[in-house]
Image 1: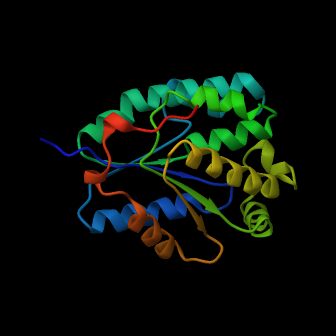
Image 2 (image 1 turned 180 degrees about the vertical axis):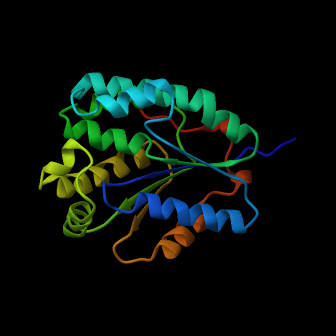
Length: 212
């Protein structure tokens, strides 16, 4: 019988270094002989591509519902099958991102928690953080890629909202790891994350936490 894989979500403010950390984590796990599947949200599905291409003008509750729908399909069609096959699944953005990005759009937290309630929760929710000034410098260096990047207050607001998202996830029983990318190399970040991934024998898919 194939042992179920681990599900890891990586979230954090724009410019915090998610892509670099995920690449390093993939390498770290692969070197240990662990089968890894990388994915991201919005997904590469038709719905995910629609969200990406219309992000600039679909906002608020409408965007929150589209993102939630994409997530449920993501779990059903990609995440769950890979976990059942024994892969460790790493997703770039998941519930924590919704608890932040949609709040920047004015959607209340209780509404977002209700949308996320029934969805599969990760075995480890990683939230990357850094000083807002460092994040702003990184965004300025690479250039803005979405409407939030044009708001100079966004980095500080994102950092604070991710702190609140971490508390909400922990309250729901989700293991949360916060890692400061401003004071660690990508390999150090990857080692910290890999060391915190729960042993498959300690968790059961029949007792997954939910948000309420």
